[in-house]
Length: 300
Image (cartoon, rainbow, N blue to C red; front, side, top):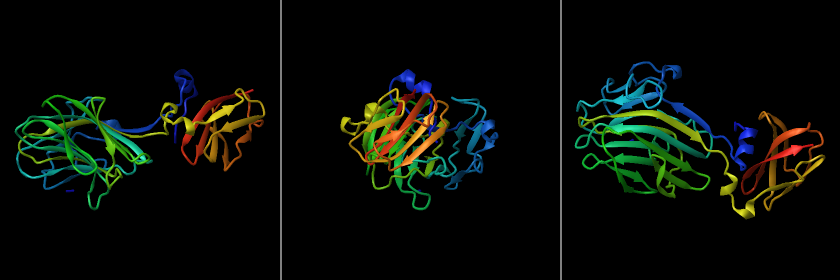
């Protein structure tokens, strides 16, 4: 079977490093290019497994975000695994990504349900997956190599599910309504190329809305080990800025308060000149051989 965006005011208000993540939302709205009716063929969605084209639809109902949702009907035409998939590789721009969505299934004692993220569109190997057992409503999640049982879900109730795939730390995580239910190592396959909403068409369907694909930024300062920490001085700075870190500095980027890149340095020394900068507030992004860090500083 198959640009980081920087907000100086946000940094100052939080008092700690945070880089805005890049999120693409799919909520099946007209503003996103969707029209009511068959989902297949719209915005890269493709039905598979012999499913009737009228089963996956964009409907003006059951929305958790906006006014439309994706509704999967079931009339028992296939009685085997089928579904609708989308290639999201163009939305995944980095090593670490979160894929979240709102999901509601119609009933138990009907269809099995699965949400899969595949490594590629050729062999369709699992990178991550969630399943809902048709008899019990048990949410199952795929670990590095097998499926494990999670909480029991109720039909006709919206749930927010999130899959975090972090190649930078070889980590796979699952969340239900904002609560982490699993963390562990990624398996052999680590890409997020295809998202697939699957069922076996035994008379019950499901609804999906508010899909979000979020490319995660660098670690927050609270997540970085002390030995990898970067400090800068003096701050405020007039002519020179000293950067203290145990790692080798590979590159430095400096952004003004509007988020515009004003200076870049490759393989720089640990003391750099800022005399050419205008007076004001800046962010400096330091990439080392161990990690990446962003700090705010003031140029006098």
